[in-house]
Image (cartoon, rainbow, N blue to C red):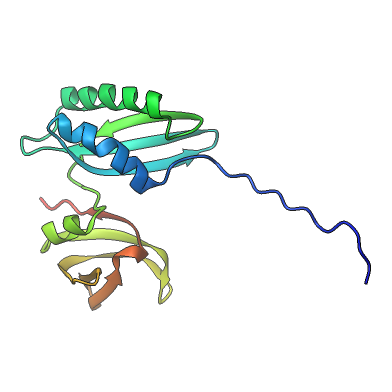
Length: 167
């Protein structure tokens, strides 16, 4: 048996807190201002990244509300430094095509049409549009897909989901 140098592996790890940790850090600040933190998206864009917060309230969201939350959260992020490197903070209302992040969101919008994308294909397909029929206790979303009928999806398999505005 020959002894010598083996292959060397080098992994680059970007120091950034996980999405649930970011939500746990930001949510109390948003709640103290009287808003609901609907969700957090962190999108890497080369050397820069985008940290997008969706906020809501019963009265709706105005530009002033977004500015107020942005100012408070910016201060928190400067102190805590949960995101490394250059990033842009964006605060937004959920809008008509509201993103769904949490199990409560899916349960709240039973009967509404949703467009979703899966992490991995299911029967060769990643994108679905259908009406939310319900959310089971085990975290399974029941969806009535157009021309296909009932489909059951684990929430953890969903990459992104948005309501489809109906006028």
